[in-house]
Structure formats: C-alpha cells, structure tokens
Length: 368
Image (cartoon, rainbow, N blue to C red; front, side, top):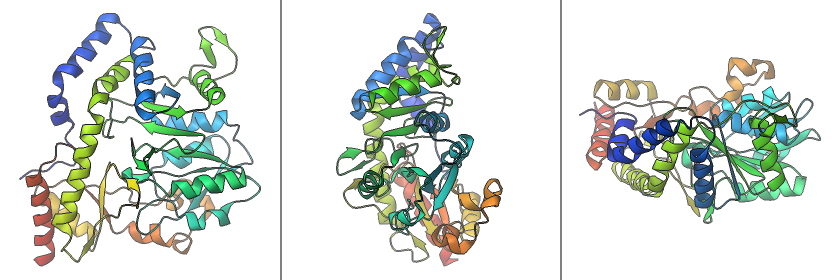
C-alpha cells in the first residue's frame, strides 16, 4: 500500500467543481491583485474566526514581520519565542533588527514551556510569540496573563493551528494579533503562498494593511514606506472556495488522530502525541516520538509510507543562530526530541485502512 504524507490532489478532486469555478471567475474578471475576491475572503474568514479584522498578505512569514514592524519592534528589542518551530517565527524578529530569545518546549505538547519564559524576560523584551505547533495550542491562557502582567505584546503564530481552541476560544484571539499561513499543505491551504493577520485592534489593523500595500490604503497615497505583501485574487478565491469545508476537514483530522492513538498505543518503542486539557487540537501534523527514528523512517519509506521530520534541528542550533552559542543543556527537551520526532501521514482524506497499515508497518519494524 502507498500512503503519501499528504494528498492535495485528493482534496481537490473532492471539491473540484467549486475550485474550478473560483479560478475561472478570477480569470474572467482579471481580478488578480486585490478586488472582490480578496475582500470577500477577508470578510468571511474574519466572520468564521470571530475577529474584527483579517488582513490578507503574501504569506505567513510576512504576516509576522508586518505585525512586529507595526508594533514598533526593532533594534535593541528582544522577542521571546519557542526553540521548536519553522524559522519564519524567528527570522522575522531578526529582520526587524530585534533579537530572538529562545525558550525550550514542554515535554508533552511540543509548545513553548511557560515555566521557562519569565526567566528570559529582560527590560528589552517587547513581545512573546508562542507557536501553536502541529495544531496544538501553547499554554495560552497563562501566557496571556503573563504578557498583561509584564506589559508585553502577545503575538500568536497560528500557521499550523487554524481554528484550534483553548476553552472554546480560537487560537490567534488571545493576544494583540495572530498570524496564519495558507501554504498549500496547511489545514486551510491555497495553491501557492498566502497568509493573513487577524486582530480586533482597529488601529493596528489599519497600520498592517497600509504597510503591506506599499504604505498606502488608497493607490498613490503613501503615508509611510511599506512593503509589497498582498494576498492575490486567485489564492483568495481558492481559499474562499475551501473555507466552507474547513470544519468538516478538521473533524476528520481529529478522528484520524484518535484512530492513530488507538492503533499505536500498544507499541512501547513509540510515544503518541499528547493533547492539552480543555483544548481543541486540529492536528495539522501527527507527530510521534520513536526509538531508532531514522531507521523507522527508512523502513516505512521502503514499505510505501511517506513520513517527515518537523523539525530536524531546533532553531537555536541552526547555522543562522550560531552567534547565540546555544548548547544542548540550554534546550534539553528540544535537543532530545530532534532525534526522536517523526511526522506520520495526516490529512482529512486519510482512511482507516491507511492508518492501520502505517501502524502495522511500525509494529513490524520493531518486531523484526
């Protein structure tokens, strides 16, 4: 049996009529930059998410950068974030001239360890960016209280956590703003790069929209120097066609994760992922910890199961941050997990038969 890591073609086939109609409409109207499709998606997504403002931009990386810039973060400032994420989270901090300050992750949930955050706060700290990794929310309620207490901005990186919740409150709505990526493989994915900022702050929303559009809300009226980071009409239309299905797809991801848990629970050489209490984990990724991880991945590949590692090197240990001189003892959980974590296939169209085959293959590897 062949089990791809993700199957975007199968999702397209399931809603082909809606996607094709959306693409055709954009072409017919030549509505490629801005226009009705972008405005409609921003409005519908904001309504679905329960926020006042959704500002579409070119990608999720830009979304973080734009927010940091419009919050006035720059040289001399520090921003605390997790040691375990894609580099977008930290590189945007550096691009503003600020310094990323890394914190290790929780052992059970892969997210920033709140117990270690406060000790990293200095007079130069201006913001904390938790990443709701793999679809799992960080300990956001405690983080929000800490940011309020210390007068810090809370920016939520929701690139992997569309509609994740803690106590029935969506990811991205606990702080000043949240950022999202609509990269094709995300739970709600475009057919190219795309992203968004969500916020209930009217002033911040206007600043972000202006900065992302060359510093102008009206063409040729540039109030500030900005950048070119716009959600294009084609991607907006595709996302709009997919949006009605997101909750259905999320429920299927949740069901798939539960079935993985059932099928894998009796294999002692692996540890299945935990779920934070009072939370809704949306399972962008299903990540186990496995003994002999690399050998297991090779065995699964040979038997038709595609896997991945998210992420093979914790951020502080990348060449880009060598100047920080991080050592394993500074980030013991992240350092240990880089040799254990393995992402198994996860997408709404995954079947029980697929999951059974993956679990059976894992068991066979350890029993051989």
